[in-house]
Image (cartoon, rainbow, N blue to C red; front, top):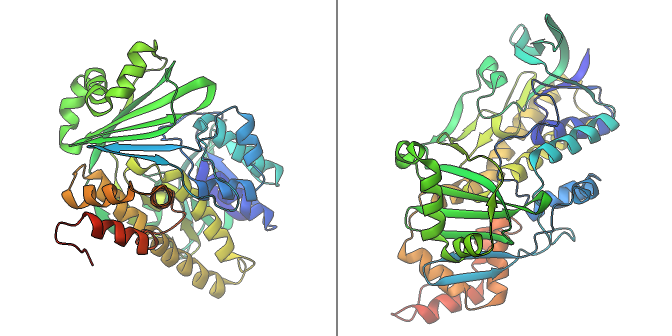
Length: 405
């Protein structure tokens, strides 16, 4: 009998297991993969997520992988260029972008060091029930055969298509259509910062990572997916050439070399699921998923792990109190992430409106406003906080009718 079973051992699951173990609970962490293992990811960890890693004592291990500190961000659209960085969060000014086969293993190792029992190569068949309450999981182990393990709380951290969510009947409480499709790969010989480039119906993201490689990702509207995947490399290179011509020049003139195959997906779902119920909770992509264009997935996963474990606290073995706290977790999780969700879907429409260009043009007039803008990108401040007196004054100065308020 475990206190907590966590299904899924990537960022959300390993972090959740780590924090529950540090709270003194007996935790089992299972995953069907064998680690280290890579996965589709934007890699980027914004400053609030970095601050959590630092507080948990694992940031030094991330730095030791050799990925560079990312303390400069560039965003270009139309004739506008923003060049700056987010404000620091609890002293952490730089973002980091380790490869996932490194980051996930770091978090798993930290969880095991905290006392978590970890079983890899275990394919979960689904939850087991005691009446209407989830009482653990059934899974097929790496050595064959079916095993059942019981726990007071079962946490599904098993991804966008979560078998745990399906098994407990966790429905969608909010869902939107697909917005973009994406392809990416890794390059050497392309020095870069964290860079974003936008053009009508196109987007390019650039993230330096381990081994002096640079992740370059291209986005298109979802309705172009069939066309793009018919010849993804040609569309990918053309997207870079037309959306980020200076980046394209860096690749061609600097001898950039593509060092991995092209990866892609047309299934970037946008939803919030019911995130808790009797004896269970969901974290990470199982609970909430959105388009990767704003690279918020890792940050969201770290936030959810912390929120769930802090909300449950020492109440795991008080059934009535646990039920109330799990409901509170689900409600607060959605309340905290809904703004980022809506902002992401706004960006993922790949529409360059005159209103947004006017806003960005006003922001470009001041290094302070640029810093605050990138602080909204990182979630260090809210969009509402961005609209201070300086920004209103800059917007007023650009308005042809002499005022925007």
